[in-house]
Amino acid sequence: MRFATRFAPSPTGHLHRGHAFSALTAFDAARAAGGRFVLRIEDIDATRSRPEYEAAILEDLAWLGVSWERPVRRQSEHLADYHQAIETLRGKGLVYRCFRTRKELDIGRAPHGPAQPFVGGPLHPDEEAARLERGEAFAWRLSLEAARDALGGFDGLGFVEEGAGPDGETGAIHARPETAGDIVLARKDVGVAYHLAVVLDDALQGITHVVRGQDLFEAAHIQRLLQALLDLPTPTYRHHRLLVGPDGRRYAKRDKAQTLRELRAAGVTPARLRAEMGL
Image (cartoon, helix red, strand yellow):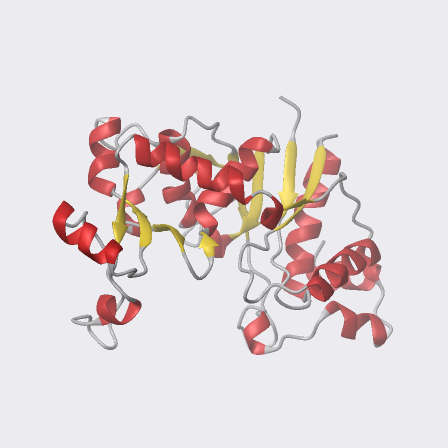
């Protein structure tokens, strides 16, 4: 299959150096392989996504010299695909309704210790029916126990890492989906969750290589499980280093990192930016 990769930003703010590094790393990989480069807009979080940020993403990428296939896939336009996948998993007995709130999940956790992955299970049918009758909100969670039973264990799950994880993980990687617990696949406030949408999109768009930052390396483990449960192909992963600022911290929207728009206004050229990032 022809090499294909993607850049998949969320339109919840302006792009910064870290985004540019990731987009150019993926774009350069596609160009070097004579393959396809796909831009995907991951806007399933309707509460934070903004059209003006999407427009700015297109402008910034064009300024960087990045070109992509059209039309651009917007996740918000394909919610039916994701809900169908949930119905498929539901039909296999792999998901359950979870009525626990975030506050309830936090009770009992050590205040300063690492968060433990949540593992639960369905309520008794009578209690579930009563809660549904009262109109209580719930999330669809993937059951690790049911998934393990369906696959006969997780020993056969793995993926190929051509880059490196945060601890230098590379080559053939044994997937450890249990580290994520019973993940949420959909909830009322944000709709479908990231993990489910991304594995479906990668499969539908023929992505052969997922080129992204090391901060998403752990996500590959649970995504590999979803690929197996939904009979989807497994791409090769190529996680790259994270770009950090002078303070040693990685660039992030929440820290108000200097945006590409600001760099452009200050007279920085794409060539200079590439050189500064070591590309």
